[in-house]
Image 1 (cartoon, rainbow, N blue to C red):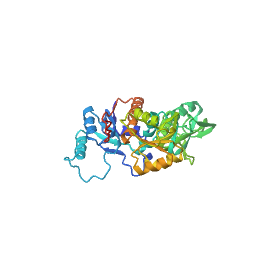
Image 2: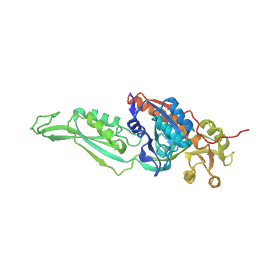
Image 3: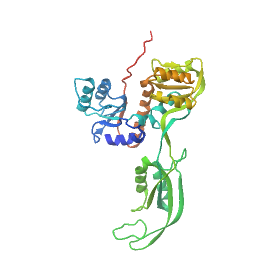
Image 4: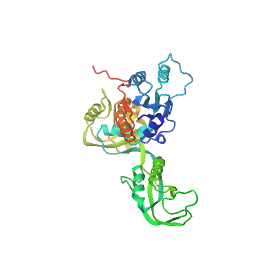
Length: 375
């Protein structure tokens, strides 16, 4: 079974919600009809590259999910005598939608920076710089004792009940519920016009705000009453942290020279730029996919020995080395392409769970504009 572009976006944004994106970021559906049916998706870093657009046409993609924006600046015209305009026209002519997830995918758990940390075998991984906390709510529902476990299971399977590394967290208090069914009702328990007293359980659980509608829907589906009594309270406590970059440790220390070679091999890039003494030992590693030089001071403050990121400029590199932080720069493309396979696997898994038959293809086009001359 296929799904619409909108349905796929809803599934994708369970991984990387729009609210995580940095201010002004150009994310979301850039081109296409939200109601278009999708049978095949192409996942890529760069949707504007002519080679990627040709690939999307060749593989029969209905939707392209990209990391970098297709439309980044205000468009005053679409000229088909330019490569960019020709690409937009081809996407429109073949009815290919393009959805973009940029900094929200950088920040998301399981996004670019987690993929980069995993590719480098980092342990004890933490967020480099916190930027958001998940908003939480308290859901309270009153359930007859006979359906207590059923309703709890429905809510928790939909995403409720997480506190730290614990799941299925609820609090249950027994009591007596009263109600009198009026005309037009079809009570699960009791009779019309008669005051009923029923042994019920007050079930309380934590709900992450982005999942509240799905959780409430699941609860209502599992609850036997036609009119369900429930409350939803905002909470002041902070939920799961989200942030940019990651920091962790190598299993064993190695020289900067060995680590740079390790990065080149793991990220499958032709070369890396290195700043710092090649003979120094490094073990604590900060990573930030894409342009990360604005977080050099953060990496230093967090005690990193080396920072793996891209697009580092001359003077920023000098300042980092002077402060004792080595830099390994595998390039913008090299630090971000690691997310493509995990992202495709996430979509395949979610589609399987939803009984959707949608092919997910990872782009085979290398859109890195830079190369290395090695001879």
